[in-house]
Length: 268
Image (tube, rainbow, N blue to C red; front, top):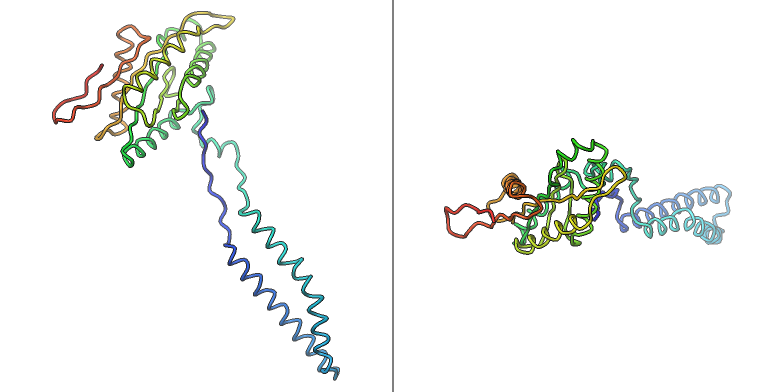
C-alpha cells in the first residue's frame, strides 16, 4: 500500500491577470506604432493617407500580436502551472525504509499522528497495532543479518497483502512493525490482527539457507479521548510484550477505558 506525498505547485498569475497584461501590452504596442506612423506621415506631408495606412498597419500588426502574445497566452492557460521536478529523495522525504520499501518509523508515526488528528476532528474510530516477529533476536543470532533482513522483508510483504486497503504498515524498529487502522473499532482491529497472525504462520519462511516457521505477536489498542502518541504507543508496546510472554503467535488487545472516572485500561 503506497502512500502518496503531495508536492506544492509553482505559483503562477491568474488567467485574468495574464489576459489584462496581454491586452495592455498590445494596446501600448499599437499606440507606439501609430504614433511613429503619424510622425513619419506628418513630416512627409501626407497626413491625408493616415486612415489608409492605419488600416494596413492594423491588418499587419493584428496577426503578429496574435502569434507573439495571444496564442502563447492561450497555450499557457490551457497547460496550467508548470510541473515541479521531483527527485527520488524529495518524493520519499526520508519516510521509506530502504530494506522493506514500506514506511519507516518516522513515516508510519507521522501517518498515525495524522490519523489521530482525523479521528479527533471527525469523531471517528481508530486503532493501532504493534506487530513483532517472535524470537527475532534469536533468529538473527542463529542465521545472521542477511537472513534476518530477508525475514523482515518477507514479514512486511505478508502483512501488507493481508491488510485492508485503508490500513497502513511501516517498519517501527528491527523486527517490529506498526499498523494504523483508520475507521476501525477494537473488535474489528482484533480480527484484522488475528488474520495477520494466520497469514504469517500459514506461509513458512523458506530460503536456501533456512526453512523454519515464523510467527508474529500483535498488541492492539484503540485510540480514545485523552490518548496522546506516547501513551497510545506505550499501550501497544505493553500489549505486544504480553502477547510474547504468554507464548507468542497471538493477539492481545488493550480494552478501551470505561466511561466512569478512575478506571485504567485493561489488557485482554
